[in-house]
Amino acid sequence: MTTIDNFSPSFAGQIDLLKMNELFTYHSPIGLLQFESSNEIITAINFVDNEVNSPGFDQELRSKIITQMDAYFAGRMFVFDLPLEPAGTDFQKKVWRQLGIIPYGQTITYNELALQMGDKNLIRAVGGANSKNPLAIVVPCHRVIGANNKLVGYAGGLWRKKWLLQHEIAHNPGKTTLLF
Image (cartoon, rainbow, N blue to C red; front, side, top):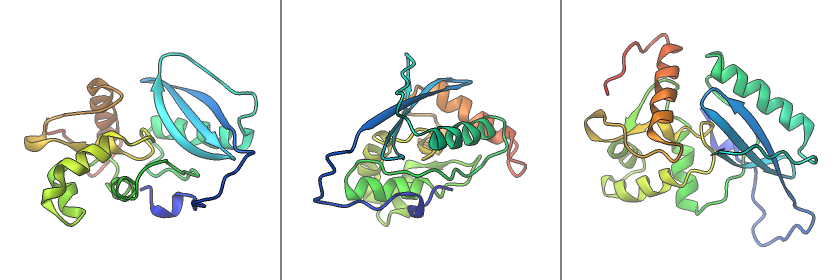
C-alpha cells in the first residue's frame, strides 16, 4: 500500500529555482509509462504514446523504478516504495492517500471510498479526485470501480484498468475471480 509516508514533505511558499522536471519512460506490458521527477522525487506517472527520456533523470531513481515496476508486472511486488510528491489540493491528496491503502488485487466502489473519507455525500468529489490522480498504478486508482462492480473511468483507458485488475487478481492468492 502507498501511504502518506511515501509522500515527500512539501515546503509551501518556498521557490526552488534549481528545480527541474526530468522524464523517464518505462516500457510496460500495457504501454509506455512516463515518470516525471523533480529533485529525485516522482511528481507524475502517466501513460503516453511517445518515449521521452531526459539525460538528467536520476539514475538511482530510474533503477528503483525499473526494479519495482518489473516486479509489479511479474506479480512479485504488491506495495511500491518510491519517493512521491504529487501536485494537488489537500482534499485530492487525502483521497490519493486513501487509495494507497486499498489492498493489492482488491477493489472498492466510489461509494465505499466516500464512506472511508467520512461522508457518503463526497462520492462526486472523491470521483473527481480519483480521476486527477497523477501517479498511475503506484497510487492505485484503478482499484476503484462503479456501483454494481462496473468498470468506469480510468485515465489510461478502461482496457488498461481491466488488465491491471485481472493481473493483480491472478497474482493474489486470496482472490480468485473478478465480479465485472
